[in-house]
Length: 461
Image (cartoon, one colour):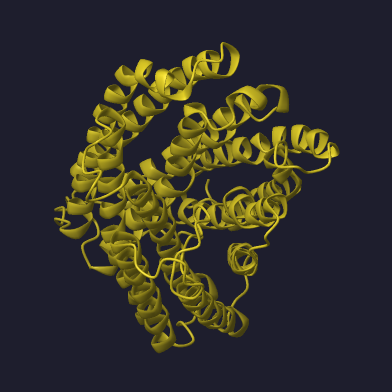
C-alpha cells in the first residue's frame, strides 16, 4: 500500500461483503420459496424477499465500485484521496439508507407515503428520503474523487472510471421521475436500469479490470490503454441505443424494434473484446504474480461476463424471439449469469487483490479463495442451464400452447429443485470466500528471486 488513504477502501469492501452475504442468503431463501411456495409466506412474503435480494445486490456492487475507486485512484493519480472525512461520511449515509430500506421493506412501513414508503418500481423501490441520501452520497463521492484526479496524474484508467461513475450518478436522477403514464414510466426506468448495467457500469468494469491486469501482468500501460479505449467506444456505441430491446412491448414507436435488434446484437462486441483483452494481456505479460486468486477472478470475470451478458443476452434479444421469451425463466438465467460474471466477479477480483495488501497479508494463502471461485462459478453455471431449460419449457407451454401460468409452474418444479441445489453451492462458496478474505493467512515465501517485486509499469519482454 503506497498511500495511507487507500485504507478507506477496506471499510467499503467490508460493508460490501456483509451485504453480499445477505444477498446470496436471501436469494437461497426465495429459491426455496419457488420449491415450496407457502414457506414463510406470512412472515416474509416473496415480493419483499425478492426486493431485499435484488436491492442488496445493487448496493453491495456499488459499494464495491466506490471502494475500488478509493483504492486505485490514489495509485493512478499518485496522491492521497482529497478528503478521507467525506469518504467516510459518504459510507455512513449509504449504510443508514440501506438500513432504512431494509426496515421499511421487512415491516411494510409507511405504505402510501410519498416520502417514506417504497415506490414499487423494481430495483429503485427505495423511499424518496433514501434516494435523496443516495444522491447526496453520490455528489460527495464524485467531488472527492474528481478533486483527487484533477490535482494528480491523469491516466486512461482514471479518466474512464470517472466518466463511468459520473454518468452512472447522473442517470440515477431519473429514479426520481415517476410519471403516471406507464409507457413513459418504463422508458425512463430503463434509462436507469439498462444504461447502468449495459453502458456506464461497463465503463467502470473496463477501468477496474484494466487496473488489475496492469498490476497482475506487468504489461506496458500504453498497450492496456489502447485496448481500454476500444472497449469503451464499443460499450457506449452499442449500449446506449441497445436500450431499444427493452422498448419492444411497452408502447413505444415500432422503429425501436429495428434499433433494439441491431444495437443490442452489437452489445456482444465489447464483452468479447474485454475477454480477448484480459487473456491477451495475461499471455503477453508472462508474469508470475503471487496473487493467483485475483488473476483467476479477473480472467473468470471476462469469460463469464461474455457468456452471461453477451451470449445469454443475445439468445433472446431479437424481437421475434423476445416476443415469446420475455419475462420467463430465460430472462432469469441471463440476469443471474450476467450479474455474476460482469460485476460480482469483478468486485471479488478487486477484493482478492486489494484486501490482503490493505491488511498487510500479501502474499497470502489462496487455496480457500480459489476453491470458492470454482464452487461459486460451477454453481452459477448449473443454475443458468437449469433456468434456461425451465424457461424453454415455460415459453413453449405458456406462450405457444397457452397453458395457464400456475399449471406451467407446477411442471417446472423439478427445475426449481435443481436451481435450489445450485444455489446452495453458490452460497457455501460465498461464505468460504468471505472467510478467506476476512481471515487471510500469510503464506511463507521461499528464498530466491521473487518476480512479484517487479514494477507493474515495467513493459513485458
